[in-house]
Image (cartoon, helix red, strand yellow):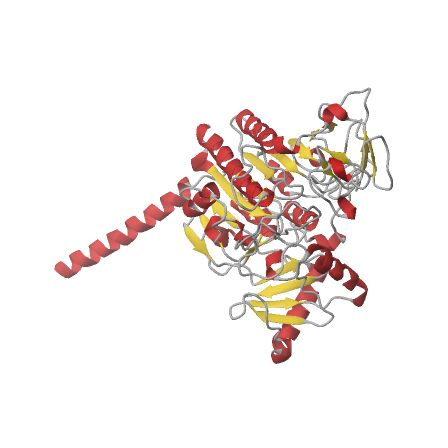
Length: 515
């Protein structure tokens, strides 16, 4: 009788446990609000949870403590434009030969191209992008005094408030939906990337007017005491003030979240920080001993705290999925002598990893990545190999949206990894650098050889940016478990693995990951 009783008790426990698990799955929100914090040039080691001690990132660290902090998570590329393209399309930038776009480049993502926001709209989401764009606008040589299109509203966003290109390029104005903010008809904007226009002095002409020196590329039109790339005339009342960007972007983000009503929303909060020029608000200036770069990191943390506080005020915290990451790895001197190098101290922007922005080494794409969704994922740290390119397919799968043929061809459903139920993640993952391409296979890293014709750009990364590019005419192979800093090229010791990864990379480049 006791045996029967024990057996029944055990069976009852199993049934109740199964019912409880089913109840969790049944009550899990199917359409969470989604906030994607996309920081610019933030390195793996630039936040406290990844080892930073010279800057206080308490809000970001709290996200990690309450969610999952990934130690082997990657942007798709070590530069801005290809990463942003891949994030929004689920397709690697090399497929369209994407590179760092100039300020007058046409829209890279054309109307009709499936995108992350257009996919989410199928599930009833309201969508917005606030912050830096740098994916091109219009059809090239934009007339900033008229309707600017195509742009975000033509590829799935319901609302956009943009820094159109980058902070170090003209035009230094905001673009809300299709129009420049605050532009006066009798003071039209003109922009040139081929020669000087207008009366504004260039940094090369009046170095006495700039806050800090710039390299030749960045030493053109002076606005707000900083020389920029390109020449700009007009639009005086429309000019932004760099120091005000965080408060301006926060206000737009808050308004969007408050106005969506009962619809779920997707907010792509695309930071300008910590990209150059680094001009933090006076409230954040001097918060670190690292100068503007350190203060800009502290400012990023403040923004995260402000937006999360607004989510909490709106009563949306429990049903909001937050993704925090960066578009590529860190860079110190990226055109301006703002003290980022001299004030670095013991801070390690890339952690233990070699390289940085532009580089083929790990610090080029291994970036801070945190997923936060109360009650819906395992808290803690994950070593799973993941890529931002998988946000697209993973969110589609979460929402029950079937991707069409040819849509997001490089994006895979990695929900199990993102939510902490899989500690492995991807089997293969591509990393793009400024001139080359690499493949991860577990702990193995293969860096494909670079053609001799492209090695001049490798010299630019080393000489102008003081970053180890990792570029070579010969193939490279590293075991990151044994050599996380990629010091020892062991290609000659493992010809079988080298061949396997070379062939796999060739195949993936040709056909994509979902073919």
